[in-house]
Image 1 (cartoon, one colour):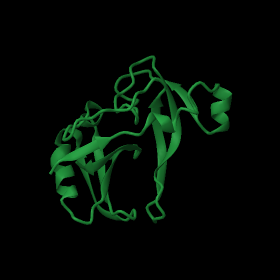
Image 2: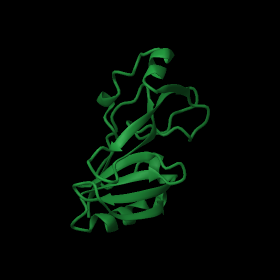
Image 3: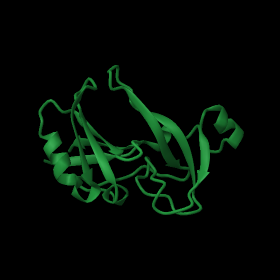
Length: 155
């Protein structure tokens, strides 16, 4: 089964780029400087920031549906990020090196299945979960910190 991993769109965050630290703080956003690699995974470009890169750390509602599973969590967005262009059936490097939680949702946001997989073994887990006809999409999360990583759809 073919799948497509997508990051968030930069356009969702353009109003934050260029704000001062005080203005960001007023929106509950913090500017951080990457001090190691890996460790600061950007949810727009789907790459780890390099040491010295500036990122925004903010709360993002990744499952905004009217469901008991409605959810948000902290994410990083590189200030200079471009939208990720991940080929069909490809796992970006930012995901290949992490322990990931996979969550399968119905169209109305109900959790149908969940699993944990090492990033290097992610493709078979994605294919298995997307084989369920009631599954509309998957969310990937970094398993230990719990933060949203990317979305997966059938391609």
